[in-house]
Amino acid sequence: GQQARSGWWTQEPICGTYFRQSEGGSIALEAVDIAHVQGRQFRWTEGTSAWGLLADAREGVFQVAPDCPYHRQGFTVLQLEFLDGETAFEGPDGCRYVRQDAEDGDMEQDDLGDFGR
Image (cartoon, rainbow, N blue to C red; front, side, top):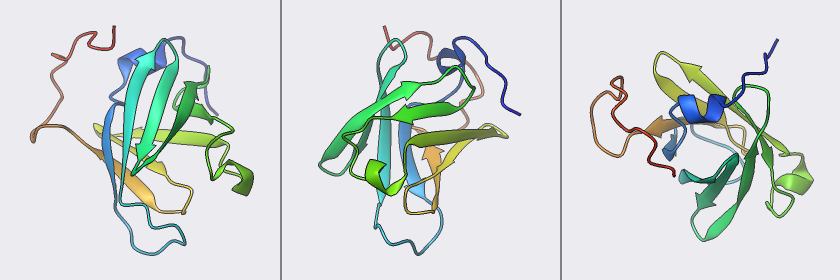
């Protein structure tokens, strides 16, 4: 099950651009950007659309804001997976999206600090 971990969103590599890894899907999302706003608030940007994400107490879970166009179709929760240093999620189109760092190379070293302040 998912355990609650306070402040998990400050400890995991979340912000960045996510690119679709699989073909198909009814919604043609190309790239999704996730940025930190403040506290538990994040912002999903995709093309000209943007809406809020709120970090849940459960690790890797974001509540999707109701103004998201996919919310009515049941996309109410964004579930991030943290695997082998990779961050990924399944988008509203059912495709897998994987985070790419701003610069190439591993981000294993934690030199980003608290850039979200």
